[in-house]
Length: 172
Image (cartoon, rainbow, N blue to C red; front, side):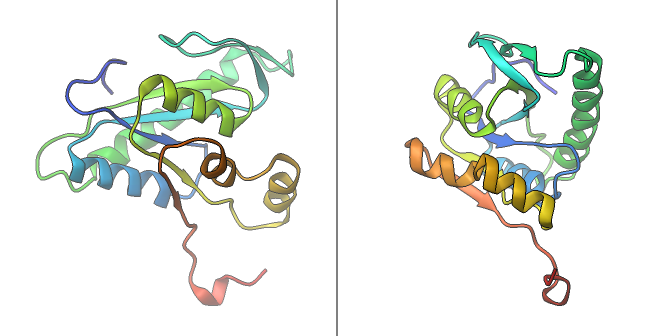
């Protein structure tokens, strides 16, 4: 992991989640390696809401569930850092490591990613499609699609990485 400020070209922004299908991060890491660009990974804690936006650091937030304290978020980010480190190390870099950092944001994922993209002046946002299953469909119906919202409400290119599953397993 590298410091918040990157040297060289602006970073590619990738939205990351715990237990996210690996194609999203793998695609982002390989693209960053090919473009010699760093990765700005962002995890949005939906159980919090934005209190104050501080462009230099993670957002100041308050939890919607006060019983869940910052230790839960720290545990998630620790796990995410390990996954990111492993994925970036395996990216096709040709010996040049991909710089990366992880930011934890709060609130609505699409809006939080759009704010971070604007602040960081990233050339592209990379997100995944929803996971398969009824609970994910209900969540998307209630909350909306992050990729769809981003493509309609900001001017940066958005790469939506599909969830790849063999055709015979694609039925639910």
